[in-house]
Structure formats: structure tokens, C-alpha cells
Image: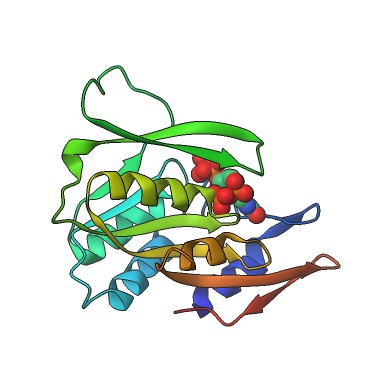
Length: 193
Ligand code: G4P
């Protein structure tokens, strides 16, 4: 997605070996116009797939996910990282290990929001090692619903996430694919949309 790649080049900052900081349009301050365009792109790609729900994990997945849901006119569900006192029954959970943060968290969705009839599109801001997407796939599977695809805003293609998801037989659609970071610059692979 050209608009997104241009924005990454203008506003992204490379931190250390392999972290891209995009806090002025995606992970902290949110550019709703760009998110809306991203949502439309995912909706176009999955227009014929019969998607009934969009799912993500809090926090930074929520902005692109909600615009994808708007463009497809379906509800968006975000998995919670902390148990909420109002979540009392029928909770579906998965353990998600973050290689970046070196912590395991339990993510959860109330079972009443997913059913066997649902066809779910997962959306997330970053795909690195794929652990967040894997956790969501597990939760959606527990509900007997179908994961139709995983839509990613920024994929770090030099990490293993894409392979992990594709090995489960699930399509990955990434709007920007980073091949590598090199001397303070970044190189893209051809994006999926
Ligand atoms: P994984 O889910 O693909 O396995 O990713 P990993 O454990 O490596 O990353 C954990 C967190 O770090 C995720 O956010 C992920 O989005 C984020 N992350 C990974 N690589 C980058 C990067 O290069 N830049 C930025 N900005 N974030 C990155 P999270 O813990 O779910 O955080 P949040 O969504 O609550 O902010």
C-alpha cells in the first residue's frame, strides 16, 4: 500500500537493530485518515469472503481493526490482555508470549461474541514473531469459528510470524512488508495489497 509505505518512510524511526517506531500515526497518536484507507484496503481484499467479525488484540490493533470493521459493516472484537471484573463467564483464553517484551500474557475474549457461524478476519498493527496472531487464532478456534485471514499493517518479514501463520493454512495480507533495516534505512518487499 503505497500511502502507508510513504508514511513509514517519512515518519517511522528505526530503533536499535529491528524495531520501527511509528507512534505518530499508528501505535500512540493515530492518523484516522490513514487508518480509514487501511480499513478500506482490507475490506476490498476480503470483499467476497463473507467476513462476519473483525478481531484484534488491544491496544494498537484496535485503530486499523475498527476501520476495517466499518468498511465491511461488521462488529470488531478486541481481545483483552487483562481480566476485567465484568468478564465473569464463558471466557476464551490463550497464552501469548512476547519475544520483544519477554513476558507471557493471557489474552481473552468473551465466548458470547463468537459462534460457529462466524468467519473472522484478524487484524493487527505489527506482525513480528506471530505470537499475538497465533493466540487469536487459538481463541477463535475454541469458539468453533473460522479464521479467514490475517490482515497486518506492518510486517517485519525478516522475523518468523508470516511463516507461522501460513503453516497453519491461513492467508496473511500485509499492507507493508519490511525486508530489513540497513544503516538506518529500511527496505520493503512487495506488499500483499
Ligand atoms: P508477535 O506478536 O508478532 O509475536 O510480536 P512480538 O512478541 O515480537 O511483539 C510484541 C509487541 O511488540 C506487540 O505489541 C507488537 O505489535 C510490538 N512490536 C513488534 N515489533 C515492533 C516494532 O518493530 N515496532 C513497534 N512499534 N512495535 C512492535 P503489543 O505488546 O501487543 O503492544 P500494544 O499493541 O499494546 O502496543
